[in-house]
Image 1: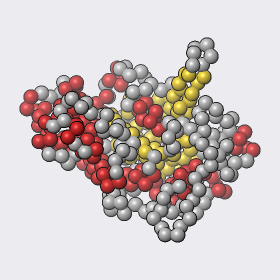
Image 2: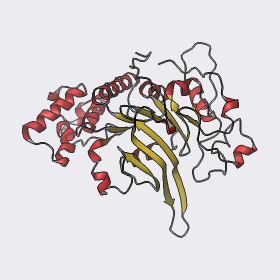
Image 3: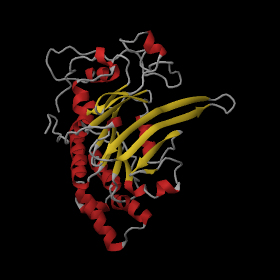
Image 4: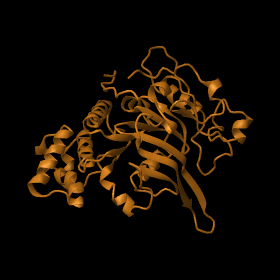
Length: 353
């Protein structure tokens, strides 16, 4: 258990290219994922590249944490993963089957039950006029899987799985706390026995004690059901607690990805270093580390070279002229920085979890 009451996930093993576990095939495979949005009129539009050539793998029963500042493209990736947004280019594969395309396409429909989404806000995620038991059963009803007694038994089973009495099924959303609502949302996500769940800031709207309970619930469900998660968050402490590997996103690009213990102890990219140094530590007399200077880069105005160059204290002319590619520095550990070997700091000492 951690200092915050969070159970520790199993450590990752030997990693392969793009951080994929080398001892098993990935269930999720993302290659060159890009999403562009056109702004303005067709005659004089600008193109906003919210996600830029992102690649990663997620193994069976594994959690990949995806972190970055607001506006970095995290949620856009999550929505593309389950088909709410089509990618502009690139591919997403679930168990080897491509699911990248427009919502409603046959290849996505065929595997829809195998991937689900947990949204940030449990208040707006539930219909206030629908009893929560019916909300949990809605995916079952749409799929036409069960009816009558079998449906009721499945709903009761799902409530028990998330730590709620089955008798709560007849109540309405306003009768529950935020943490209870998120448990209901998780139960609904599990209704069709998915293999892969995207959690988009799933605990961000909860207080710290409730965050710990929901994170522990997600890890317990992962152990019991063999679930794989893409866990999107801005809270690095929560990401460290639940993830085996972590991908750091800046201005729509993955700048570092690797096994969480090594990445947190010895971050190789300046942006990862800055994020970790900004995490509060409960130590009397410890000087607060200054955050990285400047504002998050506008994806409408990316420089030719490294996207972080305008804010990076280590940037030189090469950084501004030549874009660093994401390259493997150790097995399963990739960094997009020209000078990752010379600027790696001592361990930033984030609060132990």
